[in-house]
Amino acid sequence: MKVATTVVMTAWLAATALLAGCAAKAPPPPPSALHVPDTWRSTPAAGAPATDVLWWQAYGDPALSALVGAALEHNGDVRIARARVAEYRARVALAHSAQQPTAGYDAAPARARALTATGAPRTANVFVAEFQAAYEIDWWGRLQQQTDAARASYQAEQAGLDVARLSVAATVAAGYLNLRGLDAQLELAQATLAIRERSRALARRQFEVGYSSKLEWLQAQSEYLAASEQVPQLQRQVCEQENALAVLAGGNPGPIARGIALADLAPPQVGAGLPSDLLQRRPDLARAARNAQAASAQLAATRDQLLPSFRLTVQGGLQSSTLHALLADPTHLWKLAGIVAGPVTDGGRVQAQTEAAAFQRDQALIAYENTARAAFAETDNALGAIARLREQLAVNEERRAQAAETLRIARNRYRNGYASYLEELDAQRTLYAADVARLQLKARLLVATVDLYRALGGGWGT
Image 1 (cartoon, rainbow, N blue to C red):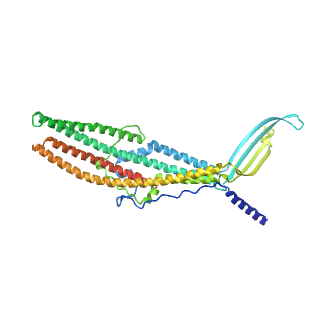
Image 2 (image 1 turned 135 degrees about the vertical axis):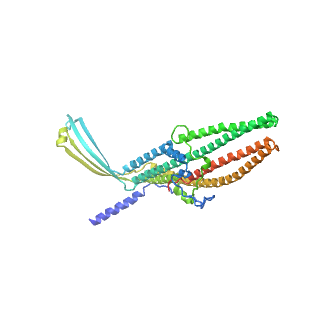
Image 3 (image 1 turned 90 degrees about the vertical axis):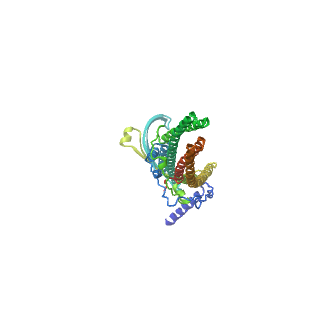
């Protein structure tokens, strides 16, 4: 008996190995072409803190924090991403259900008229109540691979939610900082317009009394109109920026609450870390990696479709010719079966599906590499932008100081009669241009730090 059992087990293992060789052939994945750089081209600030999930709070503006919080709660893209996470969670449960036993029942009262063996017609009633249960043995792991693929897709959508949250938070923060920059430019334009108004009035009085020429009066008028033109243009830009932020926050177009002024906003120090750290910090990289895992698991499940499936079924029921007998003294029926099923030939369908799944896996792997390279470039660009903008601001401070001194000298020369008013107007234009450039550079530097937070993953995935 023991020898017979050994023979049976040996035959079973041999048959299993032989059947396993019937699986479709999948081409190997492409070799990785991703090379992680050793360092960044632009050196991050020394001693900078680690990137936090609530990184927007580093700017110290309660209005900005409140706006980002509202956007993360009500933004339409974030809400869609949440719904996709719920959808893929349900898909995991659906895939896992294939590994569980199934059970069902049916009741079938029937009345039929048929011929007997003698050729006489006979009418009979049949009342049947049955219960069925079935379970597929996942011998090859195909069902588990399908569940693993669904779970990896679910994890990819979870990372996709983080991608949406990071994108919305960064877009709102950058938009708010640009708005504060426009506010500062509008204040400067309005203050400049008031100065131009006083200068125009002075030039007109001096022209009327014959102290200056009409050219100086017309030039003062032209400078006033140029400054006046800037105000409505900036007001339009402020309104459009407010509407864009309100929509991003999940509301209707409208005004946006302000917090700290641009002059008081300081760009935070952001620690970039090593290039290899980025692979664990960015949610889009996590999503690409999970998509690659899902494609690999789906490939394994597709490849094993040619292998036989093993299914156990149990069926039991009651049968009688009358309903009363079905309830009181029925005939008991049962059936227990083990089923082995598998394809003999399918015209190459499974092999073609396997090759298609393999190429989908390859696409997912290449997409991950592309995402990683884009992450490296975005981080390096943001670091470089911060460094260069700081240099520009330093030069701008020197330029503005010289423009302010030039205006002081030109104003004194004009008041003492050594120069015309045109010289002072030219100095005013130079100082105004330097002031506008300073405000724009300050806003761009703040937005560059937001871009760095975005490039670093904003703390998600740490």
